[in-house]
Image 1 (tube, rainbow, N blue to C red):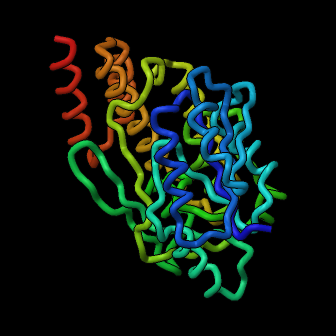
Image 2: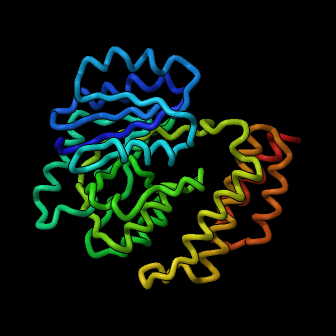
Length: 295
């Protein structure tokens, strides 16, 4: 059994995938397996993976498209490692990532939980570090407010006997999973940043902001809001719900404006109906984006 199983779900990212795979191959900690789940790609993904398959630790699986969560669950089913990690196909590990995780894990008395390193977040114009979780802080609140994604975590395989990714949801899916396990397991945090997360301002497809996608995301978030756990009591206030809806409508408005779609104004009006003063700057900037793009 390898120490780590790394799962890379991918879909039509042949131009990016080799860099992600290479970042796993160059790890200083070598007890791992890599599982590439090709979620129905129609480009040359299979061809760019093929040269890596001479390394017996690397496995490739093609499936009919099941969206991201379906691909992740397929990877979990195939994983044989003690700990399971997920790497997006446009992100990369620095060479010490698995070494840092392994060191963190071996320092704990109970290894059967989940672990996290910090993230170096890169956009086209700047780089910054993610916030680190401090032991004793409110874990569900930290995960809810920091939008961490899933790539910096390692999960003991026993967690997946009870929890899986919700395939009904295509957005906020990683948050859905993390919030579930945060009510049942402690998180241990490494104070290092051995992973690069690429933040693409214009990465979303032209259909990302459509109303069915928003409805799907809000349904996911509403489910979380209604979970009956004392650790999630902070989610049951009207202020949290209003802020959630305001932020999501503003986010979708900006995505629509980037595509010069007047649907953005519909989302903006919905955001106004949930107006809260702490977001005034976001309201103003979103309005200006719409004005400049469409008028």
